[in-house]
Image 1 (tube, one colour):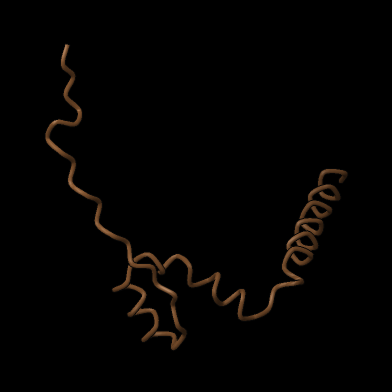
Image 2 (cartoon, rainbow, N blue to C red):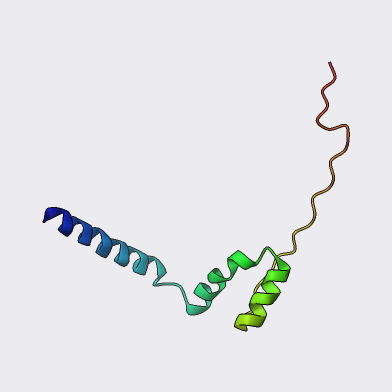
Length: 76
């Protein structure tokens, strides 16, 4: 019985903690946060924009520069 009470108290505490953390966030903030996983791939961001009608602030990731052939060689 005590275990059930403690489990219920933990769930209720978690519910109120999440609610307290999100009480200062606006609906716009939460919408932007939900679109963050799609921001690093411009093609996927475009598809999500077409599907949802929401604007995704996509980030253009530059291609890494190719490594020079000399790097990684040890000369003794």
